[in-house]
Length: 158
Image 1 (cartoon, rainbow, N blue to C red):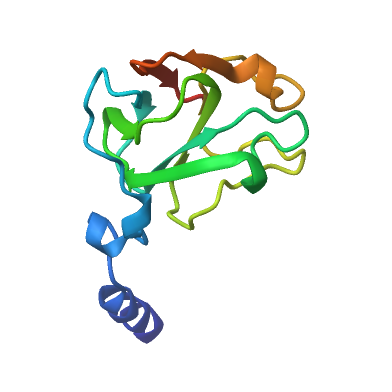
Image 2 (cartoon, rainbow, N blue to C red):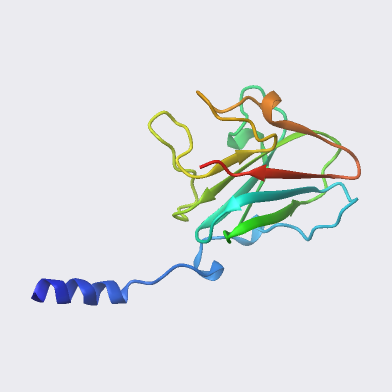
């Protein structure tokens, strides 16, 4: 009985990380204010649930380094909230780009993966391809960004 009391007392002292101020989201990871027609990439992510961090990443064309730091232009992180969330990247030159997003449910700032390297946490790409035996190549996830900008919607897959 005393062990139960001690463990409950210890649990009561643990901090609860639910507010964005308690999440490890850094200033350089903030989205810009959305301004249609300015060359921005506006990304709406659906299927988000409350808690943790929603990460949205913009990539330049790359055959070898897609979904790796070398080809990532910018990563936005925001507190994950139920429903859909929209974030915008700063204006980019027209061209081909891809977006990847994931719901970092445990807020460890990393995409947790299964043994086969597939995402363990909800994940999505700009063209909403089905994930089968591996992650798609850039050419299977890219979209055209015209001078006036683009708006895309990504459905998280669990």
